[in-house]
Every structure is written in structure tokens, then in C-alpha cells.
Length: 174
Image (tube, rainbow, N blue to C red; front, side, top):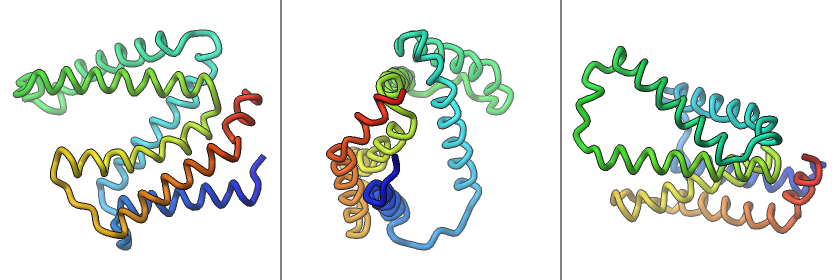
């Protein structure tokens, strides 16, 4: 049940995500914005499709087969789009990236199995905070004050959502 308080938490999450990703600047849509919206649509669709699957299969199996078939599709299609695709410069980075993608899917599906898609999506807003922190540590990317405020808004919202018991309520519905 969406209460005014919970709607406020969601608004805080969205404001935080906006601030951390845009540095507080106005957004002028570019081609990359459309691509990320499409990626979000496909990821969301995959999550929604996987919920019924996770009632009959373990998250391990669903993550394994999604990774396997996704990899096969990439191996078949990408060489036609990117001719130099198989000339990988850093094989270890590709291997580590593949492992991280599999682990991401595994934990995503375990979360979806335990709770609702909506709750999983709200909690995944921590992604932007973690990317900003890891970008700062490993890539020397900078964060301005507005981005730090955005990150703090996301963290506070996630804590408030957790304390409000939304995850328990959603879990009992699924």
C-alpha cells in the first residue's frame, strides 16, 4: 500500500538519483539518454518476466541461463555490428566483467525471488551511489557538492524505506 510517507521516500530517491547523475544541471536529451532509457526498459522487462520463473526455478539457474543465452546472442550478433569484436585487448578485464555480470544477475534474481520487483527497483537506486564512489576511488572521477547531496538523499531514502517495512509487506504479497 502506497502511503504519502512512502511516496515521499520514492521522491527522495528520484531527486537523489537526478542530482548524482546530472550534477544538478538541466537535462538536454541526447542519443545516449535514449539508449540508457532503452537499457532500463529491457532490464525492467527482464525482471518482470523473471518473477514468475523464480517461483519454479532457483535464482542460480535463472541467472546462469540468462547469462549463457545472452552471451550466445552477443557472440552471434555483435561481430556483424563491430567487425573488430573478437580482437580483445584485455582478456582478463572481459573475464572479470563477465563474472561481475553473472553475480549481478544472481543477486538481482535472489532479491526478486525474496521480494517484489518494485522494492528491488527502489533498492537498486544504491547503484548510482556505488558507481560514484567506485568511480572516485578507481577512476579519479570527481563529485561536486550537489552529487554528494544526491548520494546522501539516496542513502537516507533507502534506510527510511527499509525501516518502514515495505520489504516485509511486499514479500508477504508475492
